[in-house]
Image (cartoon, rainbow, N blue to C red; front, side, top):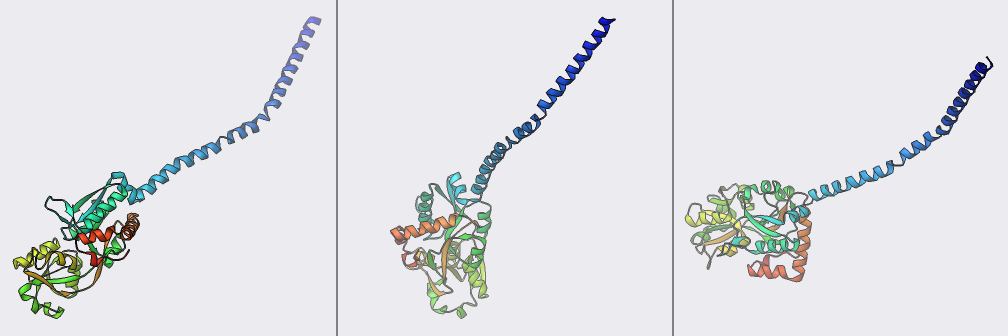
Length: 300
């Protein structure tokens, strides 16, 4: 009986001891919870840094995507939209594009570390060609009209120009002022400053693809007259040219040439810097003298 009582007492003591042990263990682990929470909080800082590192390349990629400069350098080619327009852009006997604008475009592309590619465009669609990235710039004796400057990011003006009337030389004395032009049918390049001038005067005209085509219309007798750029007229019309039986008479306006890029393009500022450097070192003048357009240059 005593043994049984003793046994029961021992069991009771063991139970109390076990309960005390559990209580002691729980009291030791309770403070561990804040430590665990603090430990969990510490890894958040690296996670935030990791997010920053992930976002940085994305921001850089977005900036590069917005940069025409990086786009052109990435593909390695500056694509220049032009028409056949002597002395600015035209082909030599070997089929290579030359001219004041063509040569300056080659030099600019070289300064960027890329090659140049010339693409003949429909002048009336120049903005669409630019925005669709078929071309990277319009560099073709382009008049800086309000329409052009509102649709493109343009360089500073680099050449003076004018729109002038072309007629057969044997009829030139009949057409010496704007009033004398009212009964003529003109050939003009579609989308050009020449078209804008004859339209503003209310004259009859037929749009053609390029200024060279307008000259051909007059030479062949299909049109009575044409309106083209004065720089082109100086190179292609009159004695010693391919159109020696044509001449120019009335000047309809005065204007300036610039180069057009996509709206917001950073290439326009880069070209302005290039023009300034080329003018300062004399290379722009040397190029202009090659094509006899030095008198039209605008100081940069």
